[in-house]
Image (cartoon, rainbow, N blue to C red):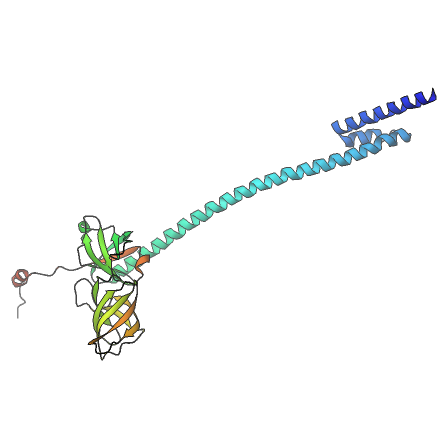
Length: 288
């Protein structure tokens, strides 16, 4: 009988503890702990001890959950900041490009004010990627006053020559094309020659007199002896002198002053019309 009673009491105690633990998980462990803390004797200690354990587990779970929620919020904030950074980078790139274009146009306008011939500003809208000719296409044409054989330049130097026009576009044969020819002048020695392009994308000054003292580093400019270019526009710099035996002339390799592959805006030299013989005869003569 005694064993049965002891077993029954143990089951009751175990059931009470289980109920207390369940209530501890469902309710606020801190509040239950404070309630049962006042219960004296072994029963109070037995009940409060598992509640302390439950309260500790509850606090840890709450702390971990709070950290997880905070981490999720930080991750979303980080993604938002990355999106804003990419947007700012894109806007910064657009502003840099606009600033660079504005600076180039300002340089062109300033050079246009200083230059004597009439200049027409134009933008490059196309490039010939074939192997036959080295050309670029401009957004100005015959309706803007552009004609064949007019020179094309930038503030840095010569770009090429107009070879074809439509009403709204024009084609420029670059100074680096072997089919182009521009009268050149070595600034230091005053020797003249013809500048032609090479297949390597450079240029060459041909027909230099044998007695010329030209050397690498000398600058070559337009001589102004042919139509299209006034005197003194930069063409390139001599990088090497070639002297062949029994040749009548020397030649020199040039590094062009302007890289045609990087040109975006140019100026077209609008040549002054040459009067015909009839117009010259009809002109009033000055009185002596």
